[in-house]
Amino acid sequence: MKLHYHPISTTSRPVMLFAAESGIPLDMQVVDIFTGEHMKPPYTGLNPNKLIPTLEDGDFVLTENSAILKYLADKTDSPAYPKDLQKRARVNERMDWVNTQLCIDLVYSLVYPQIFDTHKRRSDEAQAATLERGRERALGWLKVLDENVLGQGNKYLCGDDITIADYHAVSYVALAEVIGSDLAAFPNVKAWLGRMKALKSWGKVFEVIDGYAASLKSKQMMAV
Image (cartoon, rainbow, N blue to C red):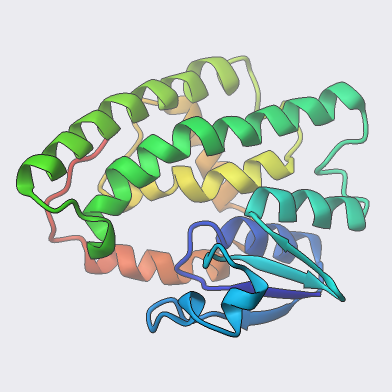
């Protein structure tokens, strides 16, 4: 199987981390998003969304990291994607929640406009309004994650066992640290993030984004 990815990509890291931790052999193909490789052929013939990651398994091509995680977990019979109907539904629920709620506000409305020029709004007024709304809503989602998802005595997003929902969510939540958030207001989230960082493959998978974050240390940013 071949994974088209880039290590700076927040959407690539969930698949990278899960594959590394699970020992899933992948032919890792870097797509240079900084030169626009993802925006032109031959890559657009593979993924017309012009996004990463993309998985190739023979003639089968799959996009969207949540779908890729589920596919890889099923293909390898991973316990990280339970077969039990209700347990699997809970994993799916958490992943959908991250995609439709937390990610939109924390990542695309608060973090990205501050760390990537391509996401910065056209005027200072628009930028300020976007960040203010993103922060307000992200705080609400982080509270839900802290009190309702993890605050029920759960070590991970779906209970005491790690699932692909954790691999999926942690790439997005960890971005809060890039903008200077220590997550002290969310102790359960902070503890969960610490458990994920203890995974043996974390350092290698996150070394590029950690290096980029270090280069932003002197920049004043709105945190959560």
